Length: 87
Length: 87
Image (cartoon, rainbow over all chains, first blue to last red; front, top):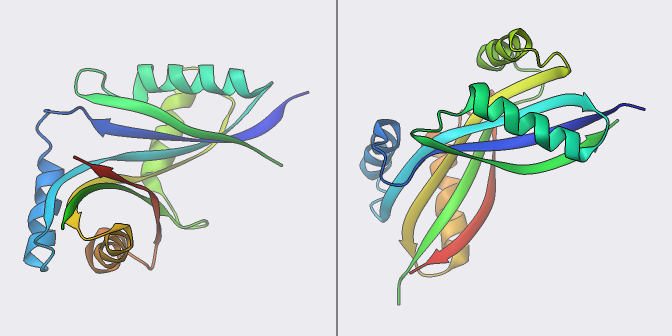
């Protein structure tokens, strides 16, 4: 019996990796008057709906997707934020 | 006494809004053999380090940043995922 799941994955530049998009957002925030911002890092949030047999299969597949396509392991880290069953 | 906080914000295309990046990722996953993927939505994950007096000020400022710059309220929703104090 297969079920549908929704999983959320976060992908962020690793600490110390140059993040030009984050720098740009930081600069724009400062110009808007948010001068207390010390650091901005910009990453991706990917929401995937897939069908699978159970939650552990969802996690295993999502991990494989991150390693093969979604994240660049040299400069980014990925993290599964949550998995929920959807009807 | 001011403290440093790290806040994470998620920005996603609204349900029903056309998401060409998500479609592209879905197509690429299918080509890699992940044929059980039904939907992919691609958004942003923004991590901000800022100083503030307390957590409620952090939330208020982050909300203002989302409304003024980070999210496009016509096509995107934003959500504060968490706030943590950093040393």
